[in-house]
Image 1 (tube, helix red, strand yellow):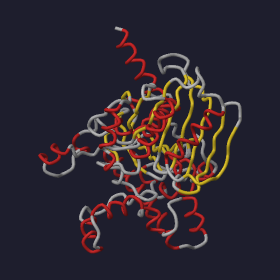
Image 2 (cartoon, rainbow, N blue to C red):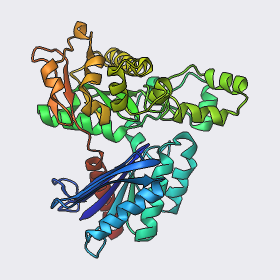
Image 3 (tube, rainbow, N blue to C red):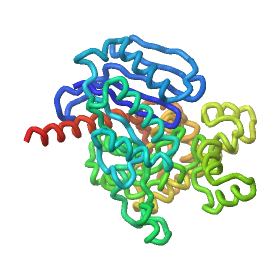
Image 4 (cartoon, rainbow, N blue to C red):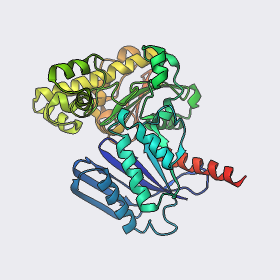
Amino acid sequence: MNVLIINCGSSTLKFKVMETRHDTPSCHERILAGGIIDRIGGQGEIRFKTEDGEDLREVREVKDYEIASDIMFDWIESIGLMKPGGIEAVGHRVVHGGYRFVEPAIIDDEVIDAIEAMRNIAPLHNDPSLKAIRSARARLGPHFPMVAVFDTAFHCNMPESASRYAIPIELADKHRIRRYGFHGLAHRFMAERYAIITERPLKELRLVTLQLGNGCSATAIDGGRSVDTSMGFTPLEGLMMGTRSGDVDPHLPGFLARHEGVDIEEVEDWLNRRSGLLGVSGHSNDMRELLGKKSKGDLRASLAVEIFCYRAKKQIGAYFAAIGGADAVIFGGGIGENSPEVRARICAGMEWCGLALDEDINAGTIGSENRISKDSARIHVYVIPVDEEAVIVRDTVLCLHIINRHLRR
């Protein structure tokens, strides 16, 4: 079975066409083609490649996710995978499943409406996913088998002490307000992959996973279960991110609305799109650019990097307290996988708890899977490149398999 996996982030569209050899996701997947469109909303960077090495690399204006989806489908058609026997199903990553979606769901009009209803609490993510879903349905037809896999599902069983806000329970229950958590596919992948690498049962492990990219989050995982995570009711809470502020005083939006003479929606937009690395540096939300400017003495870029690393370090310490220490800290995401300097700054000064990087191994680990801590470290540190698409394809195939088996009864 060939499955197209579409994974929309806050500024990217990633995809893979993956072959699974059976109708259950127990076998190793083969990647037939894949790629990424980066920096959507401006001069997009397009990098596509087939299994046989045929590729497309170009920079062109990609205004939005509809255009990005069209570029992707046109290329997939050009390599022959839109013909009969090509793509047989589509799996979509959707960030916010809310209270309703705690497992993968077959996409139909009702599911699309439910995802749309949550756009306002995940404005940078659910909207891109919806656009990709609609583009896929326009190309393949409304009855083509498609599955939505939700980032929030991994965190749905957090204990109430972690998932509840300290607000009146009546209000929380009425509006279904809780800490939902996000990046669940990434955190789940890192935990499961670590168990495989170390040949240890996942149920015996205590882990702190860090997904650091344009969006950032940390998760405390005990026995394979998310017991706390830094994002909350929306993906705005928690760590400092590319354009998102992360944690701020809850009074701040009202203060800014009153003193700047704007409505609350405008302030929410500032916190989502004009804050974080971009807001502090005044230059960019791209860590690569900021590290370059920092090396040349740019004080605002230096401050942005410093705040980013400090907040991540503080979150690691908090999760050590929450789960009683850890077997490992795992870095994933574009920054986590590719920036030795950021990893070093986050881990600096944590020798007190047994966490110590090997400087040479860390410096040489860019975009690859590796242990970057010293042999003597009590808490090890790993870089594990995240493969959300592998999780999505397995959940997609399993969901379709269960539905088909049910229909055959």
